[in-house]
Length: 149
Image (cartoon, rainbow, N blue to C red):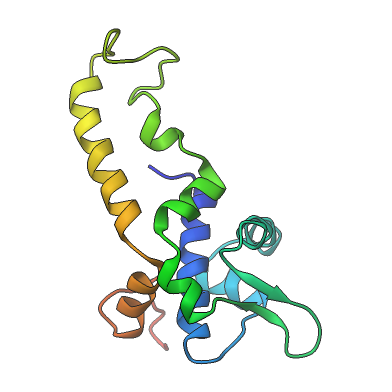
C-alpha cells in the first residue's frame, strides 16, 4: 500500500520517537539497522523527514536524530505519509487509472472509496506518540527479533 520509502520512514519515525522518549538520540547506522534498510536509502528518507520537521537532526559529538515528546504528540501519521509518498494513496484511483471520479468511476471505485476513507481516518487520528507508546509497552514490534535478542 505504501511505498518502501514510506514504510521505512514510518518505522524510522517510530523507532526514533521511542528512543527519544528515553532521552536517547540515534545515529543513521542504528536507524538503518533497526528498520532493516540500506544506510544510503535510510539517509535519504531521514533528509525528507527532517526537512518536513517530523524528525530533528543534530550534528557532532552526541548528535543524531530525535523527536521531542511534544512533536511526537502532534505529528499525525498522515504527515509522514504525505512527506514521503504524497497524497496519491488516498486520492488516486484504486487500479491506477489517470481518470477516475464519481462521474467516471473505475470498476473498483466505490469499494476502494470506502477503504480510502478508513485509511484517511486512521492516518489523521494516529499520532507518532500513539505508535511509539505501543512499541515501548511491548504491544507492537518494528522488526522480527533474532533468536539471540
